[in-house]
Image 1 (cartoon, rainbow, N blue to C red):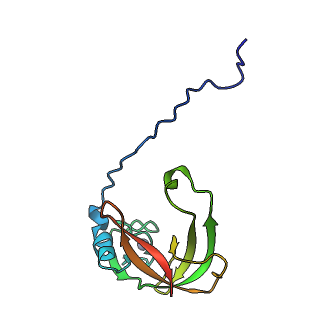
Image 2: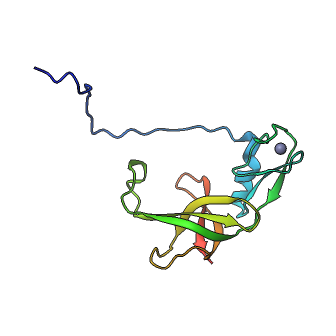
Amino acid sequence: MADVSAPRTLRSKRSLNLRFNIPISKTSRFWDSLSDGKLVTTKCGHCGKTSFPPQADCPNCMSGNVEWVDLGTEAELLTFTHVQITPTSFVDHDPYLVAIAKLKGGPNILAWVEGGDPTKLKPGDKLRVESRKDAEGSPYYVFVTA
Ligand SMILES: [Zn+2]
């Protein structure tokens, strides 16, 4: 007799590729700047809140009066983790470091640390944000040790 308490499933070893089309028209300046190696975001002209990632409208007061500000590329490491068992979506990557750092220009951001040594990194270390392009040419940012 079948075990009725266990949910019935079908198993497949096939890979599932997902493709996303994410509209970026209201935040395209972020991507264009990142391609040029600059990190920018939006700051509300009404309440003054800086948002990261950039927002078309202020999430704090809902004002559409946002301006672009340069965040610079200097950051200070707050914390990090060394991911040695990679999730399925990063199965083709070697173990990697993910960090949260405080940008000199404002918010805390999360990014991979390129070339970092997990035995030497410590909170307070100086990091720099640099832009990269993935295999499809889309820009992204990483931390590198300064
Ligand atoms: Zn606001």
